[in-house]
Image (cartoon, rainbow, N blue to C red):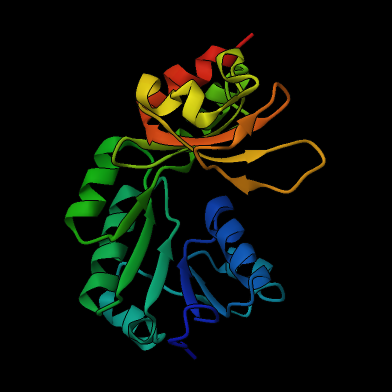
Length: 224
């Protein structure tokens, strides 16, 4: 069942709560086959007609995972949240079976650290990440925002007044604020990658990247 083509690869999704089910739906929409697994037989029954394949199993048991073919997958998503022990044991079992990429949901920082230590290759904290994103958008400083684990961020923001009617070379935004303007979106026009000679107008939106604090400081120039 598992394909090695990254564009069509089958993905194992363990835990069919809101997060796991949402990931599974998105993967199917993108053209992937999904094996959904949950220990709750009622959840399995609910998604039986929606997902490609769905099974009930105790995923904390390495042998049970092997019996359902988990060792044939290169990628797995562990969406178990509230039961931290089950989450950690499932990740550990998948790693022991040789699953190359294990994405796991964590409910707090301590849970995240444990998942990383037992071998999860990617740990996500969806509630925390979304809370941070919404907070930045609510302030009016950013239109959209993504923060990475290493203190690096990308944001979409309105052009600040200090950049109006100047090229990027003239405004020296990178030198002054420590951020990089990646691209410019002008109303009614396609997105363009930024160059030193790119002229910024008052209605432009900018895609900027850089250290999180510097991105926040730069975007705050447009708040209010």
